Length: 346
Image (cartoon, rainbow, N blue to C red; front, side, top):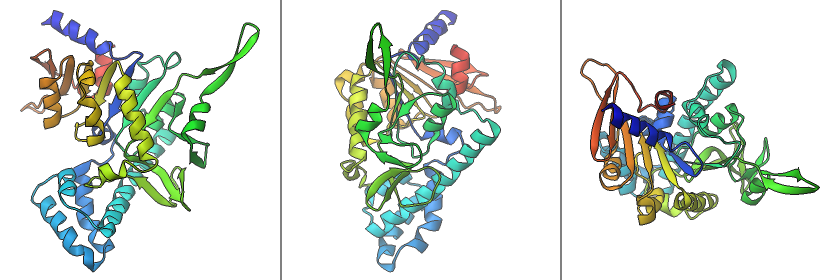
């Protein structure tokens, strides 16, 4: 057992190197105090009806009945075609919830030196020597906060400091620096973190027809893709098409994949992950509870290791590791938590 655990630890350590693409889902945000789908669904039930007109009530009643019957939000909104009125209300409520909770985290980072779990994760990579790709389906800014807290340069397709404009080409150029080698000055790409957000971000705002990135200011229209049947359709619009395209390219070119709090429920991502060349790549899945889709990945994809919480009757802590068709139970350690996993393997 000890020898096997040593092999497992070495395998996990191998993911913290050049060529790894990290995919972050809502589980990481929930661990930092940002609401997940269930809390959002309850808020929608309370706050959408007053925002919609009488013609949309029938549409909303169908959604409300499904949610109250126990159906999850993602499935409910995929199975019910919503009117423009309802879609607008869902977007507004979603933005308000995530934006307000994100701001609380932001203040604690600034005022209380709060360290995010993802900051600890970034510390395990030598970002001064190579790029790191991070893809997140979350709207919040936790990845950006972690980068800035660690002093890591990052690009996100926007250019500018306070009022940023969507400009992928110039965002890339911003990472280029001039260095002297011998008697020549040459341009080299500064190692940095590339962030892709296929579902948008709370600081993306459409103002007078232009896409901007503005932090913690209520202005314009939030640019996010909410759960529902229109998710795939919205993916063809700017800026989502750029981020989705780059996301697919990075996954296809990755050497290894790390999934943190991700449920494998997004069609944009699954399109690339299901390709044969990506199925065989080493994968590390870290989450509190494996979704049904995540379990299918563990069961059918080779070179995959997954870690989730082990529920104990005495309210103690523990974890379960799935690796090489075997299951290993770890008592007394919550290594399904990315911060605790890092402490354990390093």
